[in-house]
Length: 257
Image (tube, rainbow, N blue to C red):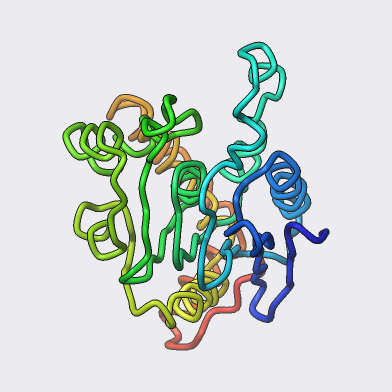
């Protein structure tokens, strides 16, 4: 899309989005945040894309916010930036999004990863919410998404101490979906995206919607959403194709209809 964020269309209906500020360990200045949002918004309605992988490079997924843009900022200036819009563009993407974390994913970088649906972390990746060390707190999910992922007591420790933790620790506490050797992270994320791309996209998107919205509602409301989505999928051609292929012992060909 531009120099700060690249988007490559791969085979198997997969998009590979990369943050590209290596000179700053992919720190998230406002221009990069905006470029990420524009990239993801362009993918929202792309029916040729069934899964998205978001990554940085081998040194950093994203090292956090660019503090040079914050050090002299006043409260109303921060309000007017409305930076939450940019992460919402990622979290509201209908296709499943996989974050592939190598190196640093700190502060806003970890919050960006948590706006995705699956996290693949390298064993030696360094994750954390260090905002308290510079006199502030997380402002894009570091207290809310993190608590939902790992629970109150781990979230308190991570936020109040500001210490980094490894990819292995992230997996152990339930923050990462998988952990693997650092040099295998991107390949593993792309392989997972490939597997998802062979699934019926309407069902994949309905599953994502039910999990995300159900997490923030009562059990009964979540079950109702799940049930209605389940029922609605019976109107899809992919449901008929999937069941017939299973009975006929052949591979299904899902078209997203």
